[in-house]
Image (cartoon, rainbow, N blue to C red; front, side, top):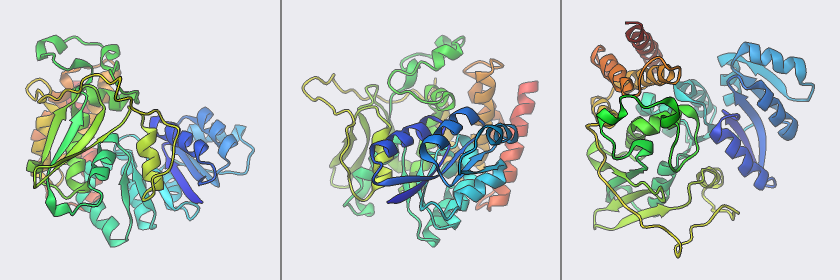
Length: 382
């Protein structure tokens, strides 16, 4: 039986991971659950799964949980508690699905403790890809991608030599504003942005998907996961979200992974790899499938993709700065403080204001993250 820690258990990926566990109760034991501040939902999860350890990062939420919960699970709080839980001996696989760069420190703690990582927190590799991959290799730790696109690429690469890979074809739906121009996006509402046509996700990642910033993060993630150059990574808009991504090889052959829009499939694959277990997930019906189409992304309107390639090629601390600025900008948008297109301006101005530093250590990345957040907040105050 595999012992699993789920960091971010009350979010979209975390709750779907628990669905996978329920369907495979004989294979998985949940030993650690961690969340930010959703104490009521976490308490229900503790009552069902009775893990050895639980964490709420928010101290007030943790205090509420301790006051209500009387079960056997030990409850920790704060970032120190989260890091302790990530490296707990109770788990051998850690699902990292915390939102944003908050997932970086606990992921490093899990790697240092020798845990295999089921990675759903793309910001970890965006901010510190060079450091994370080197650390995982040194400790013999596997990083298995949970993102639908990266899980697809991982599967397309199975049984092939990496040097035969010619191009990564990273698909995206285009979000709710596919085909629209900048003038049409000046006054879109939060509700408009959160109305994704094919996927149901958390608010932050849904905004990132609408702006194509999410694809920007995945481009940088692909560079580190598959040892690819940015010239080898091509983004393709695929509005039906059936082809989750593809790999083109040097002989011209293209391998694609197709599936329904259900995150439980990549979650289960990451947890059961290298075996492929049976499931009751929805199947594609090729007799009833709509036509599949592919398009070039509009990087003039959706400038996040161009910023990603610029930050990735610059390397060093610049992806960290870019990511932090985006997190602050998206938060401000969801609070109604800025417009949708203003997200790009916050990112671009923050990147332009900071001198890049190559081959950063962890302490420098944390410092750059803090600087970028404060600079972006200052832009919002102007």
